[in-house]
Image: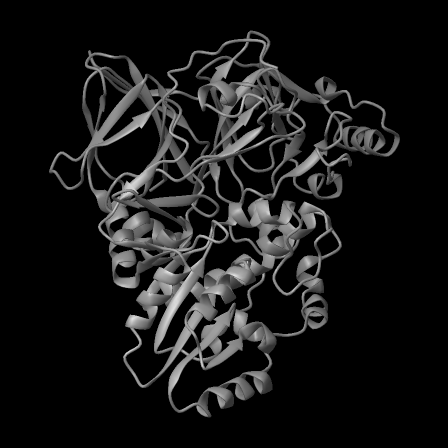
Length: 580
């Protein structure tokens, strides 16, 4: 239950939409009618390609609505469930959380004989509509008409929780961590590699996020929508989840379900997992925001950032709410060399904590106390894990008081966690899963099991030379004023030189202009009721953002102007970009 009322404008938008020109078609019958209208040949092969996780009942309901004279299920051409499980043993490992990022392609897991047999079936048909449906359908035939059936990663996770299975797997009762690991390290990588070139040519994009209610947009309109978004400010659709340490702040500020016990974290600005809502009139369809990254990477990211990261969004904003909750787990992130060698990622999770709000007793645990002996600390952590005896965190780790608008920098290898009664805007690099928990304060996860602890990884990356004085000098409020006048104060707040992100805070009560550094910008309105983002040249329509909302300004949008919605209101934004 809530114990305090936090300042709230009650205007946080949980379902932000982007208006686009493309017509949206809803329902199996209407979608089938549109697809059939595109079947101009006497014999037409329709390919219904599907992202791993698309509901097979919906997929084949759509296929049946096309009244095919021949229907081929692409899944029957893939490796068997047993063969896939055996093939992926090395990537999936025995660890509860971590695997290795696959470098394979989806086509590596299909039987050539089965594909040839399917093609022979298609060749045997002289007239009518033939349908090839399922994940990998486009590997069997390129299609005379191709529709891509898509859904968001968050919806996939919710379906797993409800007993859904991974692709080509019979695992309804597996723990969520097991399903997520297979999705993160294998299925989503394969799906995105197949999807990226298809997005350039598909005739239709179908949203399957709501079971029984598919929505569709013409391929050309879909691509035009992505191009439009890559040249204007936008928001992704946030999602929120409870946790063993969760707090109460987001319930009020973000207008969440007051009957839930807590909300621990939110992804608000993670294109790899968040969605975009496309709106035309009263019709709205949902697509993975990752489609924008895959299809418009250079316009979105900027030439320099695209050249460094490829079609991957390197910045992440998320919320960590411990207000009236508990401490986060004591943790550390891997160094770049370690994450490359061990997990196949090419960059690591450098990050920072920006305090959106804090109680008087809030704190951040950060870095190693001067005089700590590494072997003694590691032994104490292992003893706590093995015996259940408490780990005396304050004996080994700096406990630093935290207040609203403090900014704590956390380069990889730095031991850290937020204490209770803090509301953190976490600004970080994107590889969000690679957290080595060292101590979890003796509590259980929401599934009733102890959460995974990874001291064996952590002890190999902890930087024990980041001691008390160094932390205070380098990682706590390393603020440098860049510009100050009557209406604007610009401050460099981080990140540390070891990290590739640059953060700048702008306090303002009048409009001000921002130039580009050939980098996508991710921002959050950290003070004030609302602000308006506009183009000095009229390149895009004005965009309104509310308190605590994260928004993205693509490199393709050009220079932009930010102003308080209400004249003279004192506002602030924090911006992250890739350092030049």
